[in-house]
Image 1 (spheres, rainbow, N blue to C red):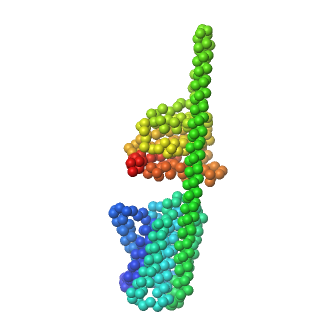
Image 2: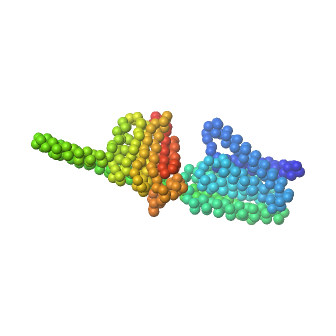
Image 3: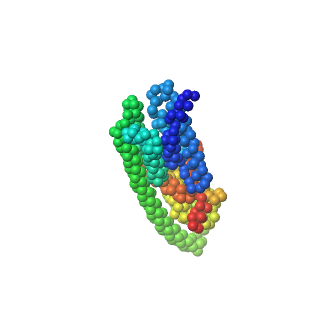
Length: 449
């Protein structure tokens, strides 16, 4: 109880409380999911209060333990802040792992640096414990929150592919900054809290470097993301050109088929006039064999899906693959033909690419249906026994030039996000299942707006 009384009597004052509040706000601001609705704002406010409470309890606990563990003396705030950030990153932040690592490390370092900076500033300029000391404390708090606002406005959470070098760079800078901050704290304690202007300059430099590294990382990720988007757009254009080429090929094949049928009619007419019925029966038998191997074309009542499926059917037939489809959709869908084409073509092409590597019948199962407001597309294909299933579920390409491939999954993901939908890849037995759901109601509302 003495430790509890001591902390809340001599340590926990207005300066300390405002500092913990600034840190709590920065954590929620950077790592939390803010919103404009009253419910989301209330939730964010509750999170700030909860983080503040956790920080306070951890600070008291570590301060109390420092009476028995001398190495904790003076570093209770950095440790408390570290544990709080780790807890929030693991259990509450819903962003991607790389984003959480980068933002969590950055918000941690800036908070402990500015907290110590305010203390050193107070000692260096001999500010008396009055309103001036509160202003010096607020100065550090303002810088903590200001950078948190900047991180929110220039957040890397929206990037799905943050380079590993950027993550490593941030973590290294954060580790070095933390070591320097702890060293300054311990030196200050050993020197009896004597003024140290050099420490102020050092902490200011560390803060500036941390901010600069984060900003550089943000713009590097922005440039990297733009390159990926351009590459995906290029692949989309290539896919459109490919579909146009296949469409022209189909048109040419249909012309040849019509010409061939016309010639066959003439041959059969001659046989009929000459009374060569046995020859005509044999001729029909041969024709039946030819048409048995001819691919079955789709006629589901939806013109767009018919066109896409007929092109894919020809592509599959050329690789001796059979597409078994079950399609139940209305004649009109509130999904653009281009988006529908890109999803179907990428899903089916990936399935066919996997099927050709297997033994036995080459079959791809496709189902397209409407469930409520969602258009559901499911493609199932057999996978080879020696395939790396872990890598397949993670959608890591096994091709030699991995950087140029895998764009199909990015294209699907972009379209799914556009329609506020859902995409899931799974493996059941020897089958790979790809399922895509597109919210048609969202697209209808966008069209009205």
